[in-house]
Length: 84
Figure 1: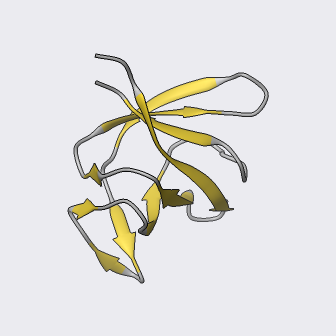
Figure 2: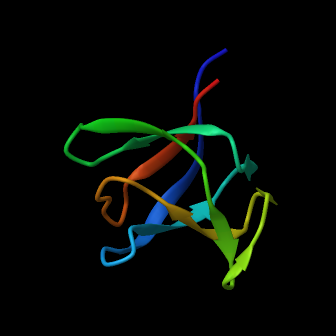
């Protein structure tokens, strides 16, 4: 099964390491994701923390905008894929 796109980064808060992601698919805490940068670089992380409107959540659906804790810098327009 191939990786599939679940969203796109719309903002990044560098001081707290949080990416704002507009979802085009479902995502849950514990899922492995791959962030594909515009310059071709990629990195993979496990979703450890996800928030909507400053509230911790375990799952999000298509159309939600979530904050994800990330351990590397991301930029607006970077794509997010769920790793299967």
